[in-house]
Length: 362
Ligand code: IPM
Ligand code: MG
Image (cartoon, rainbow, N blue to C red; front, side, top):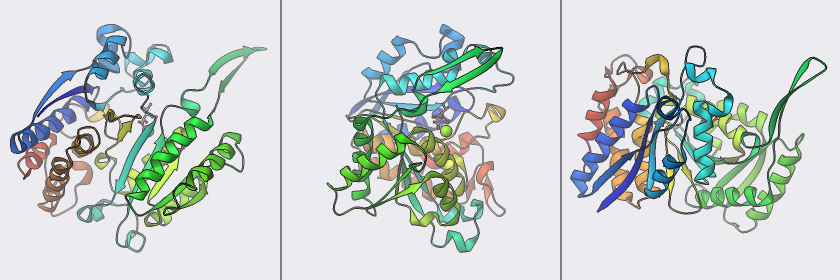
């Protein structure tokens, strides 16, 4: 079948990791008999350079017309890049927030899974790693502090900045339903993370999660305070199945969860709305310090492409084939620098893509 995919290479290492994901997708197409057609969309610094803004309305329309969006990463070095001389609403990250909101991508799924082969790269002690772990973070992506009113004013010669954190019952309910749905297909446990001992928004979060939980008698759930969760993730990550949390907490906890898997270069993500449409991107950033040097790990983007096949295009077998090819490539000892350990074969970005593509099997 023919599938229409919007592609956002973005900035920094974005173009090179997206190139490798396309290489793998094209191989999937050959093996399984599909054609993937790509339309490029500019976002972030790449869009600022051409249009002066990090995302145009036309770019949003192009993305909407596709069945799904595959993205690399956006942003540059805040100290040296001219993009950060612009006012905040014109910087690369504002484009990312705008596209999330415009496409209503409220459910951000970030799996953190420890590959047997990467135990060496995991910074945790062996007795904590045990038999490994496999969790997903369900992060709310279009509300909270990221989208609340903000302002900076000057009073009596002193500047004062305000950000606001708002959640409605509807926003909490729809993300909670997603978390319980996914838990039902996994190990049937939801840990809802909040700061209900301090924040009103978290107290409402808890109340709505409890209501939603009633509809899922087969799924166990618990509430956990975010500071405790940050600690538990390094103390005993295996206790988690699905972590459900609001936007800012999810941003922080997902970086932490990715590091305990060994490298942030391994973690994929899916941002979904109420339909099959989704935007798929690695959980990591644009790493401008290593851009264009064939050093980046393309695996997170390749695994994001697998999620895209599974969630937006209903191509489960093809998604399995990518995940299996990644596992096999790691088993065969190929590593980019970020996951390298003694006795393995160090390869660059492009070769990692080649090794994975050649292992795609029906
Ligand atoms: C992420 C990133 C973004 C976020 C930045 C680039 C705005 O850190 O996707 O986790 O904070 O959501
Ligand atoms: Mg982040």
